[in-house]
Length: 125
Image (cartoon, rainbow, N blue to C red; front, side, top):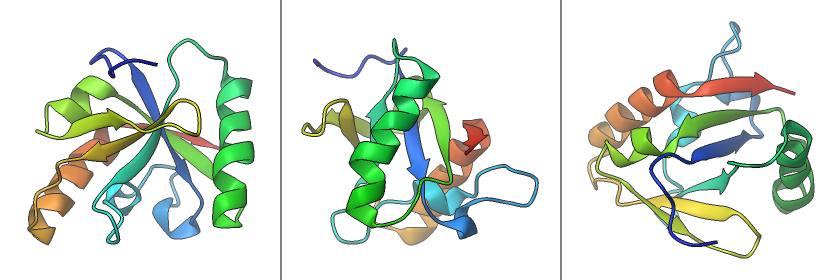
């Protein structure tokens, strides 16, 4: 796959209960970058079925984390890009990408994660 288009849909798989609110919305922490590499892992889901999206989570994400997929937060790439972040294709696995370009300051990261969470659509497993 080529560069990520701003009209593409992305999915962030959720494997931690603490990332899901009681009202089945996603907490901002789900979008925060990994402290080890400063990136947030997502998958490009435009043009595939709901079942195919879940299959990616079950086959590519869950085994790596040794946890079941609890849900996913779908978000439009344009929202990520409008927050001055980048989406870099990062295969394998197929359709994988990383959200990069996060500010150094933790409070700024939290502010962006808050907007991403608010603009995402959570799908519970």
